[in-house]
Amino acid sequence: MRGAVASIFVDRKSPWFMGAGLVYLAAILPYIWFTQSEGLNHDLYLFMSANIAYVGWLAWRRTKLRSEMVKGAWRAFAIFMWLRVALILADYPEIGEATPAEGIFFMTVIALVAMVALVWPHFNKASLQRVALDSLWFSLVLILGFWYVAFDPFWHLEELSTVGRVALLASIIALVVGVSYSVNLKFNASGVGFIGLYSVYGSFAAVGILAIYDLLLEKGAIGESRVLELLWFAADLGFLIAVLVRGDIKSRTILNSRWNYVGWITLAPMVPAAVVLFFTAPSDQRIIIGLGSAVFMILAVRTAAVGGENKKLSGQLRDLALTDDLTGLPNRRALDVGLEELAEAGNPVLIYADLDFFKEVNDRFGHAAGDELLRAFSDRLLGCLRTGDKCYRVGGDEFVILADIGEAGRDHVIEALVERVRSTVDHHFNLSFGPASVGITVGVATGEVDGQRLLVEADRQMFRAKSAGRGSTYYAGKQLDMASK
Image 1 (cartoon, rainbow, N blue to C red):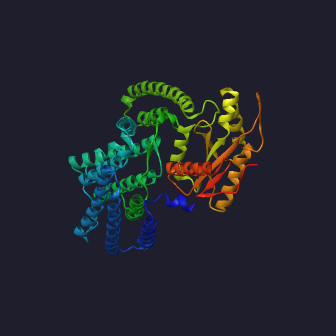
Image 2 (cartoon, rainbow, N blue to C red):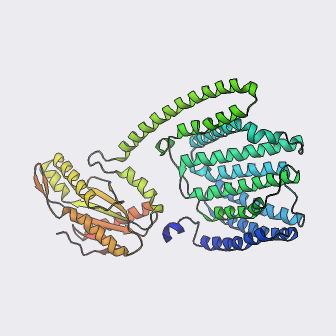
Image 3 (spheres, one colour):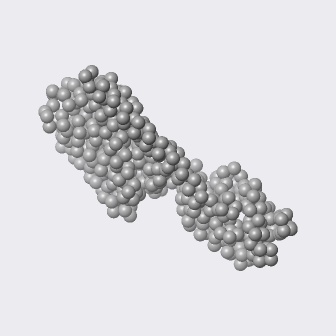
């Protein structure tokens, strides 16, 4: 558990930085909530500015990342935080003045740019275009469907100038686009980086919404809310999380998603939006709106059907690409996928096993006999593994086992697992051409979160075992006393 939690953060110092920020928020938020003095609350903005400056400094630390675009994004993020501090100090003690609508629009645009910049290096150009178009589609459907409920009232605010109304409406639309973008990203990528990504945008969006609230409150359009006032300070928690967690995001094909992405992205926004638009639109427009919605619904259903067919075909092709034709085990490509997911394991171990005397059986009885032997050995290997352990055939007579051994009794669990693997060759195989006996040489590696490094180390241990003699097992540079029976 400790290793899995630590893998979320950027470095070993990050949990301590997180703890310092949480202590500040834990102390300041209850104080704000129970304090009724407006002047004292203004003084608390000075404490908030200190926290914002602290987050800005942590963001600047992230510029050590290799990607130039991500580095630029974190620099811009840090500068934005320090600019907030400068504005607070420049206006103090008149902090209660609302941010102009133009400033709110600028803030929401920065939030969108930050999201795009942080994920840009992890996607190819085609994937980014698809995510952008899907996000715009999702957003436009929501904006159209909920126009008379959530957007049109802002356009008719008499308290604001025309420029202010345009900027305010554009800000709300930008927030909707950002939410749609973040939802679409989740279907197109995976990884612990989403914690930071959602924290960044959630905090930006919260600040934007709170700025809109302050502006409407100043113009007398809405009443005061103490909860929203508290969120001004709580929003900085999201920024704190964002600058301390890792940004690892891996793109994936939408056709391999657990969901029917094409169907979801077309139908999910249209059904509620069409209903809301129909009942909130002027009565003389409902017929044409109903007919237009029906046309788009039919198109959406057809698109979803095509997406479902493509997803099914993609799944079949993926299974073919990741499965060994002879044994039915996952192949080397599947192992590469498994190695990339090792960061989520608590304490991974990799066992590299090579059959001894397989070549002799193959040469003496023929390739058909060798194939039969490999299938029989694969069945035994699958039968000896624990639930959750994964087995791969990576070469002619080479197999890899991936397992999570947990925290307690590490060496004892490894030895027991290796013994189970070795037990597969304790007895001869009764094959169609007669009995056949083989041995097994094993190399074991653990302690690495990086999957490829773990594989290289296990392969190296296996070759050391071969050098020591067939039937040997090497782990951590030492030969285990597990000679084959």
